[in-house]
Image (cartoon, rainbow, N blue to C red; front, side, top):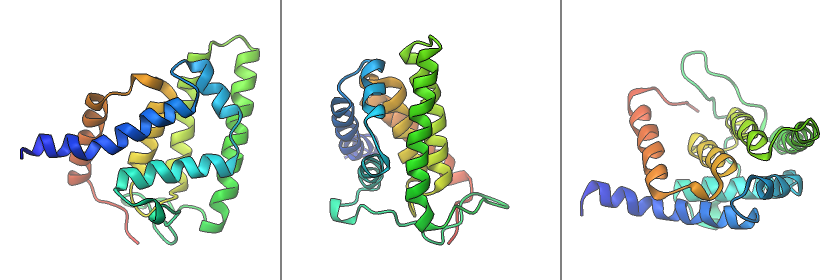
Length: 178
């Protein structure tokens, strides 16, 4: 079996997850994704992140958990993520502030796609900085960014492209250490 075929097959669960997530959000339109976000709380959003991360890491559902206690993220002089017990609270605050931002921007007359594009930068950046997981934080953040920004425009080709970039970059850059 070719390496490309194996890589595409390994991405199929992630593509299936993103397709299901877009359906859970109510559809492909940015207005539907905003409505989904407005109905989230820290717990439901956290469960979604657990599913995305676990799928990206190839874990079975029983192994999906926030498991980054004591992990130091980054390269030289890397950042130190918050304590594990504070992460769920910070995740709830992220959801609430994202909802407030969306509401404010919509009231100001911004269109839904613009708001989702803004949130697709902000939310995954914070999720990655929180470093909720021992591995796969970047994959989780990038998947989240694509779902928030692109909705149903996520294809196996797009997933293959950005995961290949991520893998190639990870081979040339130092990783976090515990």
